[in-house]
Image (cartoon, rainbow, N blue to C red; front, side, top):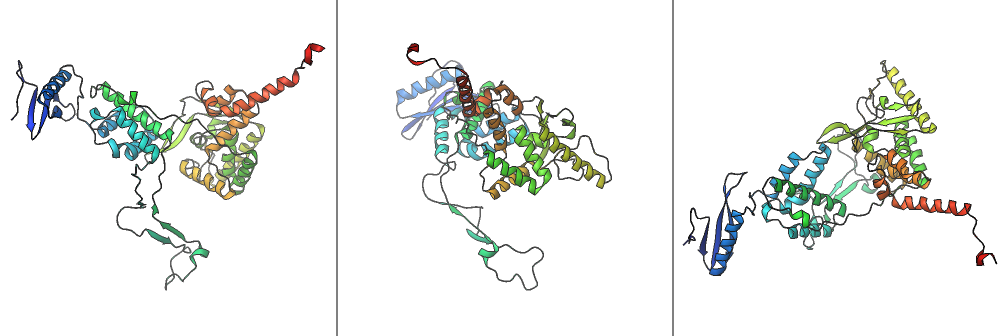
Length: 445
């Protein structure tokens, strides 16, 4: 039978016997999200301890040192994302991270019950295996539901099948593809990704604290993952030459895009957003004003990553490359019997050049091209190539940072390309050393 303490006014708590244990329950007000009554609960088997717990919980309620809602972490993350001022592409990435790594583990837990220890345990599990497996061997199925774990995807000739069906063939010679469900192999989640999860959780709890949903932010005291040092892997000069040659063989417009990224260090989204109004061939520079991205299935033009326009100077060879690219565009317009458009995109598969290349398509095409050359590289590595070549040639850090569009006056450039800055510094030391005449040994004796 419930026993209420002797208090003036309305009783806030009760001690209830449930079998061999005593459950302490204290009323903590209405949940601002659901409108339902909230209670703080703890259990013990000792009567004196139950009284102490009751006093403690009542004091927490009186001092408002308790969670103001039973909202789950999943609800809190969704509410935080609604108020977060970020680009649509960034929001889409955060939603993916929450859906894949946070909500399946902690999404159903009330935010007031999540501690720093709980967060650190999550980070540790993800560092061991992104699937958070328990070490027991199992098969990772490609799809859900009933299916064949091993399936041959036969390579068929184009067109409709013959009346009698496809003739027998040798799968190995034809190049048929075999897909099958594989045994699970633990793949750790990178510290860079875990750091982003920590940022999301910290932002969520910080917002919940502002909204009086919780009293503290456990992410502030949780040990966050160590941020890995950037390790750019630009192609070598020999590899860069082979990449340019192959790109030009495939398509002159494609070769122009690869060349431009290599010599300017532009980001993928920046080069795709370029219009002819951004190019001044007479003065020899390009104005980088926008990004072109795909977010939530929509094409979006937005500000640059640093929200600032910048101009990048062009060398004579690049000006010549762009002049030829412009001539091809004007010739294509003449074939369509239309006038060239001032704000047409530089790189487009559309006849009127009114929509740029698809970002994902550019990335995949570049990866396939490099794979065919036996080069392990990706499109962003061309940006690294531009930066490292400039630094190695002795160009000062601020100039390189300006061409890349790095904010912070070169701090980001120094952090990412510290090894190449050090190499340029050693060469500078050699130059000074060669210009100095060493004094004779032994004080001239």
